Length: 201
Ligand SMILES: Cc1cc2nc3c(=O)[nH]c(=O)nc-3n(C[C@H](O)[C@H](O)[C@H](O)COP(=O)(O)O)c2cc1C
Image (cartoon, rainbow, N blue to C red; front, top):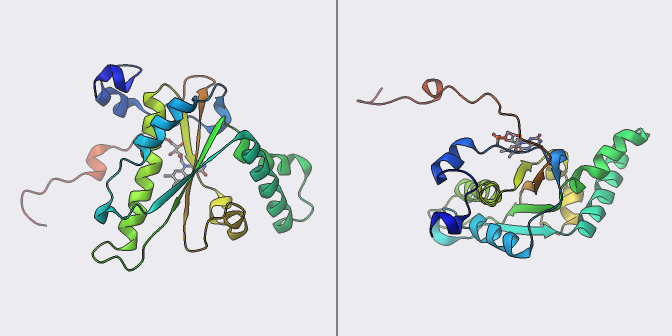
């Protein structure tokens, strides 16, 4: 695929990888990707390392209506867990899944007894799907953020989405047009996280 086909917004693919950063979901606005762009993003998202071709992930693309219904479910569950929660706090929970034009939910579908492919590897592959989705959104000129928070770990919310108990809700990936340039954040000092081995320690 040529660079033009990849529609890299600025510079080379490496420039994009080196400068990509998340845009907070609250700063993602309309327009979202159109159907063709979204399809391209999804194609890229699942182009990930997947030991044993288990395809241990599932993606759900929520329409605005589905996002609203999910917001209702978040608010209901949050109220159940926090009776008497103030209205403004509840609004934050209600709006949580409705902050961007497109919301993609990525969950794991791990095969526990697959020979040579332990569950942790399958979960890592699933994480790659989320990250690749961020890359694809960025490459097409959109902003995106991968979030989890309490709803990702709540069995009632998972049930609302028909995500089985054994599957992990690995990420809510928000995609939209950034309201402004994202702030850069402190990145790790490479020498603190990378060591070079000329012989074994
Ligand atoms: C598994 C996972 C869950 C995350 N959940 C949240 C979250 O719930 N809320 C949040 O603000 N950021 C969350 N983040 C962090 C953001 O996705 C992102 O890493 C951060 O905004 C900085 O992004 P950047 O390094 O891509 O620029 C999560 C990251 C990961 C990997």
